[in-house]
Length: 324
Ligand code: ADP
Ligand code: MG
Image 1 (spheres, rainbow, N blue to C red):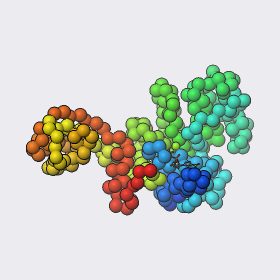
Image 2: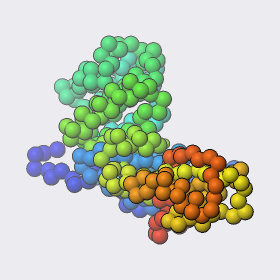
Image 3: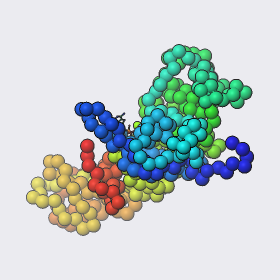
Image 4: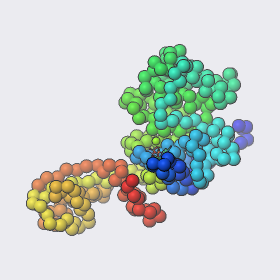
């Protein structure tokens, strides 16, 4: 890249992206992405959050050029993946979800081979620097098969960075990684983000996305159901449930002022409220005001699936989601 080349405003731009897997005779075709729009600004630490099967890996694998889209457009660093696939790939490092271990190489060799694959000239290679950055220096000449799962994953991060891409994608990088390693990995990811590398990471843990990412897009069932700066999104997700077991069985759900009761098993019902706006006490007051004597209460955080469904229901542009 020459000095006069303007940097793109967006590291990743995806428009109307669609993917239908052909499937086999038994399963039939499966649509994993239903027209996804996504813009990842240059320099951001962007989280793609969604439950298993949401379509996160499909989206990433399309960007990486290992899955063919069936509709829409995608560009990495301003380079369209159809018009300039090599350019798009050169701008991107991807740490895939599955651990792939080079059984016959040492970590240093694995990085050299990868650098060769990307055509990085010898004098620009940085294998030792990357090994050091990811805490693998003392394993540089060990066999990869002798590494722990966490070390293999760090080696995958190093491999994704051999060509110094301006965009790094990590697909569920902490699945199966212990707490200490996770912390180290995030420290490193934060550091390279501060140095200017745009990060896109997928996770199905809200806590992980909220801790790391400045912006979070939520995908569910192949659709983006929310995309907002993290603090704004958290305010929207700030709901809790109070589960009430009445003293005696009710013949109908109580009508509550300002809240809604939803049936639960064994005669209980749940009431959800926004943490910032109301409190358990207000919920209980409304329950008592409806003439219910309370035998027991518990509070719970809604699981992400509930949140995703709620967000999807709330959007008039989205068709009703179906559970499959
Ligand atoms: P995520 O990464 O969010 O868990 P995926 O992109 O892996 O989601 O999967 C999205 C959907 O596409 C799922 O329903 C999954 O079963 C389906 N899918 C993924 N890969 C294939 C494939 N190779 N063939 C058929 N269906 C697939
Ligand atoms: Mg996945």
